Length: 313
Image: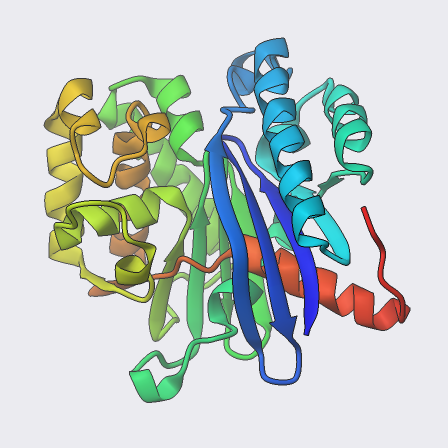
């Protein structure tokens, strides 16, 4: 077993996983998995910069996570940053702040690298005997971007496009016509690289997808065990999306599985999810709670094994 820590810092949230991994069996055992909505991407689409208050919210979460990592004695930490920090002119402020708190540099990865990590995390435990047959189309619906990756036992095609729940909300507000047009353009771009209709199994990742799944399942509270590997029919995603688009912020906030940090962006995210399902031709969605965060953890374990010595953050 290798004990590693992984941090995924996206546009809307920052997440931590501390886990014991067994590379021989492919088993991953959670020790601590948590998420904090920090909205790092606040205003980035408009200004091109990370806002001071967004940076401070993110650094506060990093300080909390540093204590958790130290408490578990993780051998290695890998910190991956995605869409918002890729786009920001002042990303050096973000990098230096993270380094000061956690002792590692955040890796501002490309969209293609993000897609590969998401694919690894989402598909490592899928089993054909459960009817989850390859090839898989994995999509990671984030705050600023959505990554698409097609593959079976390895990545065959990948593409990141700039549609996400925060970016669509900030760009279009409640204008669903403009939002749909923007999403269609992005999906056309993704389809030029990734055959979106070629998969046997569609796998959706990240908070928008898991929240929509929780609503579709009628859960009385957020339950990651019930959501993980649930199968949500296209008709149900239509129903949930229509409800979210027509509801008020107060009504969305009252939904039992809704995180407060998603109330204002979930409707746009659901619209992206629905468009992906329709474009892929999938009749159902397989929802995974294991995603890029798990892929980062596996990559950290692999790096530890390759180097032959633990690295303590």
